[in-house]
Length: 551
Image (cartoon, rainbow, N blue to C red):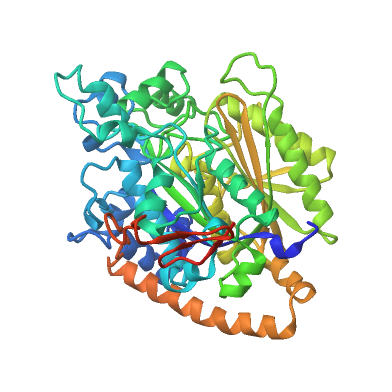
């Protein structure tokens, strides 16, 4: 990068998936639970139960998270679990009820998850958005890029809209608007940030999170914005989406899981739902999961200015399509291009390369295991990326569609902090058609020296040929750049501000463990009246309570 002050950095992340809350690395710690010390295990258990009035045992709490049997509340008519025969899913933790945390009446599940996820990211930032950040920013230098891959498909959104007449009901006035794919970004702007800045949703199937991340990082690098909220939330565990994947033969239904267990010589008298998805193994299909993942992305310059904790750098997100395809869902050439570019750029940015790791797309389908492993191996071999560590998360979290890349990013930040790579624990062994040259698949949890871990490459392969690979550099890389860019006084001032930010973050984590999330949701509050709250001149626009917009 020519201007290192405009290097995009991530200063906070929030959300939740079937492993639990994103901030505080709670969800990540659930993935490596067996590798934790007792105090960390207790923290995970306490957080998973923070919104419950019940008392449950450790075994019950753990069984109510990650991939497991689908709760019938998501399928009251039995269309998915009984008629289609799909009972494996990675829904939000059993005891993590978010419906009553704000006035969420008539909101689709994905919108509720969006409100929670963005609040978690903002609170985890450790700096008050309304009081400390918003007054510093020309509104045009704020952006929000957020939304799902498929849409709001439950009964409060598109699902209810499409089903209403068939069920002899009338569509509500909210159904159509709640179905819109960009509604996540709209809710963030209108009810959380109160932003009048840039906004949008860049859908790219399973690469949607990275498409939104790319939109923000490009604007930061071109000096168009300073601060962005990006992310995705998806709630795809419903009969319609399940039936669609069932038709493609790509989903792990009950019969396929039993057949897979039989091939492995495992018991077949019951389904082992927790091991239903087996990335890069002799597998039987993907498992759907729910997730909400949001990140705060700023320029390095703005992060230092406000004293934000820099968790990692995002120098590039590479996006390439597949070109001419055999079919719209078949693999193609684009992912070789994204991964090769990411590897090449990493080697140019690091004069002394150390350890790197790929968090693979790893869907748990037989087609993915051979094609993605070939992508990784061919690129690693061609660019001398030796002993490239590879893991995947969908054996824990299922395939969360749009937010899948966010699940990967949250995990990467957890590894940078705690030094344990979650292994492919649901996969007994690699399948025979998995390519392994120059690759080191992490079959079990693996400890790694954080100081030796330079970078992650987060990979996504989407329907239609939407491929994205995001390069994520260790915060140490950013720290080493500071003396080249900022004065000693600026660095000392930043260090002092950072202490307060970390204390604020710790205070927020303690509140969460007590079930006090205090979500910001400002519907019908602080409205701007065009008759009295805006002044327009030749050179500027003035809004009440906002910095001046120069025109």
